Structure formats: C-alpha cells, structure tokens
Amino acid sequence: MSEIVIEAKELTKQYKKQKAVDSVSFQIRKGMICGLVGPNGAGKTTIMKMLGGLVLPTGGSFSLFGGSTEEALCHARSRMSFMIETPYAKEEMSARENLEKLRLQKGIPNPKRVDEVLELVGLADTGKKQVRKFSLGMRQRLGLAGAMLSKPEIMVLDEPVNGLDPEGIIEIREMLRRFNEEENITILISSHILAELSQLCTDYMFIRKGTIRAFSSAEELHKICGEYYHIHTDNDSVALAVLQNKLGIENCDVLKDGSLRLFERLDELPLISKTLYENGLVPVTLHIHEADLESYYMKLVGDDNAEYSESDAAADKA
Amino acid sequence: MLNILKAMLRQTKRDKLLLIGLFYFLLMAGEMLVQNGADWNTHGSTVSGIIANTLLIMTTVVVGAFTSRICGCDLRDKTANYEILFGKHRSAVYFGRFFAALIVTVSVIAAVVLIPVLFLTAKNGWGAAIPVQTAWAIFGLLIVMIFRCVCFFTALTFLCGNDIVPLSVALIGTMCVALCVFLLGAADIHLSWQTTFSDIMTLLDFSNTTSGYADGKDYLIYKVALSGKTALRMLCTSLGFGLFWLFGGFALFRKKDIP
Picture 1: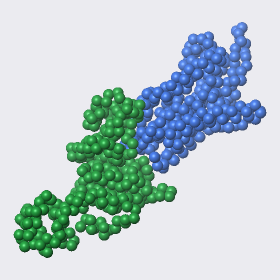
Picture 2: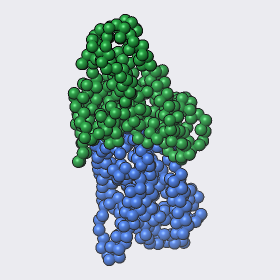
Picture 3: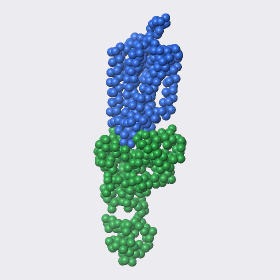
Picture 4: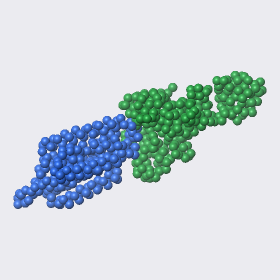
C-alpha cells in the first residue's frame, strides 16, 4: 500500500454558531485522485483551507507527509500546491508576469520554469495580454499553471472546473489525469457535481453538513451506481458457475441475498437468458439497473430529510 | 522572508498607484519648498527647516499610505494567501511586508529630505539656521518615528485585511490630530499626546524662528524645542510603541483565519 500523504483525525472547525467541519477523519495515499464531493456549504473548502493553513482548526489534527508540527506543515506545503476558490492572478499583469511574481515568492531559482508551465497549460501564446481580458477557462488554466510551478507532489484543487463549459471541463480533466499518470502527482479535488469527477477520480469522499458520509473507491462507486444486470434464479450459486464457465463472465458479484450483479456484456441479455435456461435454471428476476449516480449522490448528501444510515451504506456496498 | 521582501520591492516598483503617489508627493514637497522661500541660493540648514515644516503633516499620510498599500494590496486580492499555501510561515508573510514598507517609506522620506539639503549644502554651504548635529539628530529621530508609524500601519493593515481602511486612517487620523492640536493650541492648551501623528508634528515643527546677524547679513535661525529629555522620550516611545504594534499585530494575525 502506498504511503499516506494526507491524514486527518477528528478534524473540526467551529465558528460562533456553526460547525463547518465536524470531526472529519480520512486518509489520502500517494498516487490517488481523491474527489471530495458535497453540496455548497458542506465543508469542502473549509477542509482544504485547513490543510492549506489559511484556517486554523478548532479541534482534531491533521498531518501532511506524516508531519503535524507547524514547521513540518510549512515544509510539507512547500511540496504541495493549492488552488482554493478564485485562482491567483493580478488583473493588470499578464500571465507571464503573474507567474514570474509567484516564482519569486516561492523561491524557485529557474526562470525557465515559467515558460514550461505556460506551455503545459496552453497559455504560452498569451504574450502581454492582461489577465483581466482572460476568459474563465484561461483563468482556471493560469491557476493550474501557478499550482504546477513548483512541481508539487500533491495538488489540492477546490472546484477547478467550476463555471467552465464542457470543453473546458474535459481539458482540465485530461490535464489533471496527465499530471497524475506522468508525474505521479496525488490530487485532492472538490466538486459539488459528482458527474464531473466520475471520470477522473480513483476514490471519493462524500461530505454533507461538515461530516463525511461515505468513502468509496471508483470501483465500488461504479458497482453501486453503474449499470448492471440484477439476476435472481432458483439456484443462484449454480447460475454464477454457469455464467463464469459457459460465458466467461468475470465481472460479477453476489449480493447478500444471494442474487447476482453482472457488470459486463450488458447488451447480451437474450444470450444470458438462453444460457441460464439451457442449464436448467429458471430466472426469477432479470432486469437492468440503470446507472444512477445522481440518486446515490442525493441519498448521501442531497436530501435533508433522508438520513443515510450505516445500513444504507452497507446495502449499497453489498 | 527574503523572497517575499524581494517580490514586494519588485511589485512596488511596478505599482502605478504608488508611483503616482510618489510623484505627487515629490511635486508637493518641491512646491512647498518654493512657496516657503527656498531658492538656488538657500543654505542647507535653512532648507532643512522648510522641508521639516513641509513634512509636518505629510509624513504620516505618506508613510501610512505607502505601508497600507504595500502590506494591504496583496491581502485584499488574496495573493498573500498563496504565500501561506506555498508553505511560508505567517511570520515571513507579515515581516517580509513590514520590512518592504519600512525600506520604501524611509527611502522616500530620506530622498525628499536629503536630496535638496545635500545639493544646496554642497552649493551654498550649511549656514547657521540650525546646528548640523541637531539636524542629524532630528533626522535620526524621524527615522525612528517612521519605524513606529510603519509598525502601526502594518498591524492595522493585517488586522483589517485590506489597504483601504488603514489608508483612510492615515488621512483622517492625521487631519483629526492636526486639527485638535491646532484648536487646542489656539486655546493655549498644550497636551503631551505621544501619538505617532503628534510626535512627528512636534519633531518637525520649525515654525519658531528668530534672526541673527553676522558678517553684515541677517540670518534665519530656527528655535528648535528639542531637549535631550524630549528626544530620549520620543526615542523610547517610538521604539516601545512601534514594537508593541508590530508584535501585537503579528500575534493576532498568527491566530486569525484568513478569508
């Protein structure tokens, strides 16, 4: 298992009348792209600000790269980059001038690094154009350029695709995937739209009203929310063996009640029915379960009246 | 902290608002010099008194404005947040800006004072309006008071989180204290205020003059009411309160959530 790079234990932020973050605990390992998903006001930005040192916790603790003292956290942050809320930019300066100032502030000795990151995010041709004339997508890319300036090991990004058009979202997503795959950068990314992250993240944390409601890997989420066949026969254990041996199906699992979930060959229902029948099995239930990311998300974090209990979590995971 | 200091000094050189303010300040200082009788034949000691009277009100305004702009501009648009996110200690963020403000304000005031004084001294000699040692002592005390002023406005700027409020305090505060001093003085009430604003006004008050006669000429002589005791009090007050504001402001900033 890869090393833990960010760990929070009972992390809490209490304002005068409100608990913005309530005893949150989580671990993020090296190489993960972890999505922090929740509605507006759930506490995502507050958690990120605490990790970044802008907001001081009122309870609990957290560590970055294993260190939790002030000195260790400052040193750890020099190995990370953050893009929280509005990306950094002085409106009256160009992209290059903004990054040059950042480079000096960060103490990066190589002036050519500015050209490298401008090239990386596709802003090399902006010349002396002032940031005030940039589109939202260009500003987000400039923010990412600033985040990449110091070759971080971890990136903490707060809704980086907020307000972008679909093309812009795809661009940013591909860029982040490249950073993760080519440079092995760990990414903690927040959003209130699960669909935006569903094609990027390896793991998810669902947050609502300051508390973590669920953790899921991408694989688990896909199983819970993705499209599948739900099959129940008069002898499910035999049905499983038949599907595996006769049709070579591997991607399926068994629910607690013994029924089966099939995640592959979803366009071959007639063949599956026929195979089961030919092997003396009577399908009792055979229906397709539509991909329902939204319902899962709403159940976890969206509805004030629906309490998401541990049994709900277990049922979803089962 | 050194990186932040370098970045701030670089940014200050490119800050159009500060450059316009500097230009206007230099223009006003030059205009006041001419209006108060300075010309190419004025002695260095005489012009030093004229400059002091010019800086009476303007010093706190200029120092407050420059300090609030240097410290507050990056707080307002949140670029200072990124220094903390980069892993800089809050102390580096705070003191880096403080030192940048101190360097810039001392340089500006020193330029306004020293350029005409040194130029005219080289051309016409020092003169007899004020002893050289007294002039240097007053200049030295002025630097210490600028330090106190920068400490105060640094603390205020970091607590407010922007440059607008401290700038307003610099303008309005100076005018209010000046007005109070004037009104109370008119009523023959003299108080020992020992505020940043009033100490500078006391130090640079060269309005009391007399005349002397030597070598067949009349000379202007400044009656500077600066005793050794007063100078020591000003020095201790400036350093003491300056350090109080500086470290008090940092202690609060250290525990503050940054929006």
